[in-house]
Length: 321
Image (cartoon, rainbow, N blue to C red; front, side, top):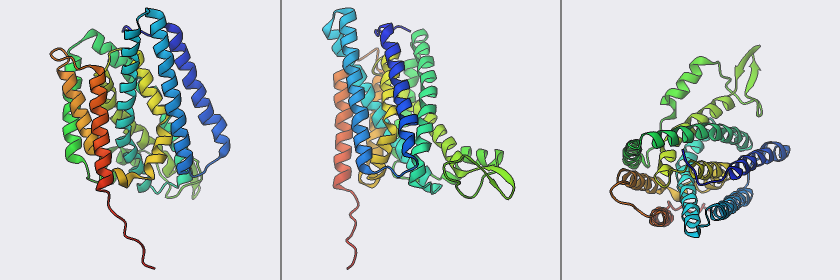
């Protein structure tokens, strides 16, 4: 697997992720369990987006400094931005599933923060492995791109037909398996994953929630990672754009959870995005679609869907005096 990024930038990226996780797990953990407000979610979302764009600026400078080619640096930075936007967009559907899981298990808002913290750790590890394996497969077997493209196209069609339908979590095979393999308490015990009930040690519902969140992210990663490979084959760009999008996932969850009903048509837009990217990937050796055009199409689809969602959002009648 070849990459345009110099070795020092790989180390800088790894150090940046470790610092971000340290702040998340050690510094912010001192706040204790609390419900994340919309204002806090907005502030942290802006912080993560700013850090991601700052890293992209550093990436642009590193490519320009290494190659001496400004046009190449512009192209690579644009690939990062497009991959980041695609991952952020696809994470929206992921977030709605998280919201459904939290609602199903009646997870108190104060505990949801910790669940998402551990979910982010698992996502970073698993997606790093999947991206490196995917990059190797594409480098060794170019035809894998066609398989990825067909998979994304089919997934987009399935997502369109499933949009607006409430998933049946009770029929989820992963949930059934977890309940068969371990005794589960019928109540939470703070932020603990295990508790003692009637003299017997058993898992709390919070452990099931974390397991389901992790499994859900793996499933969605199967969609999102090939989507970024449609933009670039550089593993550094795929990995960094993906991870930076994940780091802001927790803040993004609390932000979107507060206005989930307002973007009720967003799943349709995401389905169209997946179908477009899948088609682009399948035609990669026939039609070269510029990265800037791909970015414009993705932004336009999401913008139209979000505006249409706001225009058709269910109106809440005022309460009777």
